[in-house]
Image 1 (tube, one colour):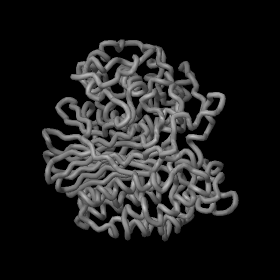
Image 2: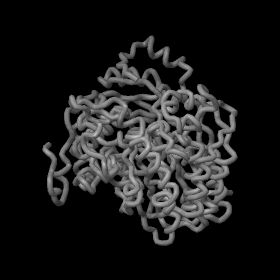
Image 3: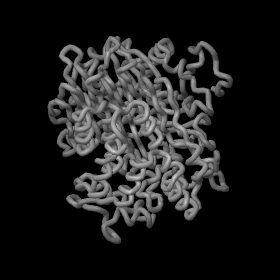
Image 4: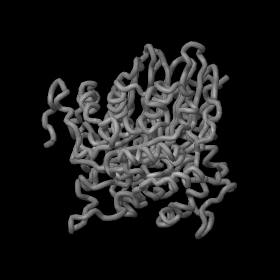
Length: 576
């Protein structure tokens, strides 16, 4: 969609005020419970997670069961042909851990694989079709979580997902519209068409029972044999057979060699809260903390919720962080990411000092975080669709997991007879450094393609402690808007005192440096939009679609609360 720059006259403001897209109705009360809480992007998945908690499972069991059901009912957002990040707290030890199950570039991948002989990017090659996918990491990550932290059997974890795939689930009107919208992409591949189309021309409609027999059989094999079948067994053989038939890149060796990374989360503080989030190859945690560092010295509450003053300062902080993202972020196994400098509070103070109070600036280039590191790295550089779920249990285990296959149904390709959609995460690399990807994000050499490398992500699974005790698990879907959606939800709770459901439902803004537009929700007031425009912000009006899902615990009462973003159609459920 081509961006449109709006000069907001009074007449346009009035039009917006009367628009049917206005979303700012009163948010419902948050879900509540006394023994745990789950929030996810689909009610069926949330229900399964809550039931696992009721049966005595812990937060890890509930998150696994929920995520596998999401892979069935929300296949356009996430699935076992993609990747995911987990940030977890183990109540037994109090230790916070990050699990990197991000996809990797196949061994045959190379820096210029999407560039033609004239030096131009081949349209669609990194987003659609067999060449768009990286080696999936989802199953490996989930098996590590179950083996290390789970208490339920693999059979129990997967039984609800298998049932949803084998017996089917009811297609909602929103899902049906999305299937129809993506029909041209899905119809390009015979293996996909036989699953996603009810006849030659029509995708599944609202009220239909959508059955996925091949996916059910694949999940049964994982239930019985675990990750070995996916990476070395019969599932792997079918993936490789289809890859060879279609002359794709992923080989048996790529699958067999895949490994997750177990990492320390990136950690920051904000107004006395401790924030633990995903480190690189995600940019999410680094820039969530960086933006909060910039904001911390301002009186956010005094700016006022929903005011142009608040949104202006928020947008300028976002822009500074995303400029740094474009320059410095990539897979740390291939590039020295200056995390220490980026999350340094003195560096944030420098960035803050350059932000005007009353007008929008044009930010020409990133900052320089290297001056705020104890040691320079070895070489300094020269100068939606995804899903999220959050769980806290009665023991204090916490889980925030964000899973993805990138854009709607990933590459569009179902891998042979597996029922698995292949991701299109290769587009999250800088396929041509300096050129925007699907989400309009700019990347540098730090995120250039290399065999075995993990593409940069915006996923921001985040855990927050207060006085060392569990407070909130939160995260979002929505490409780069994941970072800003998670950020604004946290601010809504901490600075504005909103309950978690109201916090995830509020209007949002987004700025990612390039393109130089301030994205604002339709339900931001016309007067506020007018003032932002007068301050010099180039406004792009849209539904700022990042589906945020958060759960929290009131430390005084011990009550659990959950919020599910109305933009994603999900739900939260507590255990009473």
